[in-house]
Amino acid sequence: MPTPLISKRAPIYADVPDEKWNDWRWQLSHRLNSAEDIEKVIHLTESERKALQTQGLFRVDVTPYFISLIDPDDANDPVRKQIIPVAEELNAFTAMMEDSLAEDRHSPVPGLVHRYPDRVLMLVTTQCASYCRYCTRSRIVGDPGQTFNRQDFELQIDYLKRTPQVRDVLLSGGDPLVLAPKILEELLTRLREIPHIEIVRIGSRVPVFMPMRITQELCDMLAKFHPLWLNIHVNHPNEISLELAEACDRMSRAGIPLGNQSVLLAGVNDCVHMQRELVQKLTRIRVRPYYLYQCDLVEGSGHFRTPVAKGVEIIEGLRGHTSGYAVPQFIVDAPGGGGKIPVMPNYLLSMSDHKVIVRNYEGFVTTYEEPTEYKSHDPKTCKFCQNKRPEPGQTGLTGMLDGEQMFIKPEGFDELHNRHGIQHRLKDESKWKPLGIGSGETD
Image (spheres, one colour):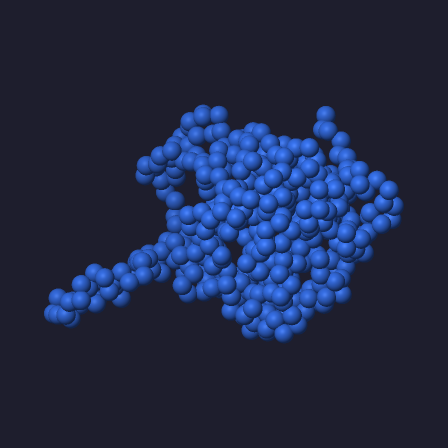
């Protein structure tokens, strides 16, 4: 029998009327951000106190609702570690970067990241309801001076209008759900006026930090812009409260599909059994586990990092041990701008020209006999292949399999191997041009 979800309120807030407590504006205006304020709710450690008194620290703000989920006497509380800074945040580590995902490098206009062929990330604010200590955008998030203005929005919309390959826009930030309702509605309206944008997604931790923001009025407004998807961000089962469940129920009833993106964090959720409880609790409130991220190489996150092997171990403990629907993809967001790379246990053990050998989660090993007379798909007669060609340069391995290219070379490869030599009679460029690879053509 599942444990019933409960509400929690720290003793300091016992006398706050329900009308105020359940008002998201009250929650925002009463956030805690100093050692003095936070110590009224939880007992700070010396490490936490030192961090909170350090100038230039990444912004601290915690809603009264979210800090109430913390056990005030447990220095290792998993909710506490996500939002209360510690002195270790100040330590540098190998490969630490300001913008580890190279988002700004893939930004054609301020606040728009166009990394993948058919979708963009649209940053609409730098403000959040509370601030995660491992934030991948800590270079701008939380800083009012870095926020995006009307001119930035117009540049973003203009870029989308003139870039027809974009069919999917993800609103993020900061957190889009802290925007004034009228501004958020205007943004969604502008996006829906662009014919080639098929779906809009929102990434938000507001339902987790401040579930009272998810009013019926908000859900009704969002429902006007379907198809609209929303991913929340829960890292630990302790974050799944009665209020979060009710907020997710309102969004689900408004027709908004919900997913969850979590980050693998040392001392917070690096446990197979805890992760199994997390994904099962999420599916019970109709939130599908979507991604489990390896922690990014951003400043302040060194003490949260785990080996990649820990994430593989967790997926090993989920696949087959719970519903497939509840198993997220484990993702390494490649440093340098390579994008999201899924990593998983190796279930394919070997293969020959007619058979593959695979294993299941129990270690059961079996074979699958391959067809010997398979007639390969012909892209020349397929209307989908002809009409949906990816943007040149982003086909990657698919382009090699389709026969469009035979090599992917490191930068400077040809120049390096030319050895500064001369152009001579044996260097005939036609020698290295494939003769119609993959197509059966010879001209």
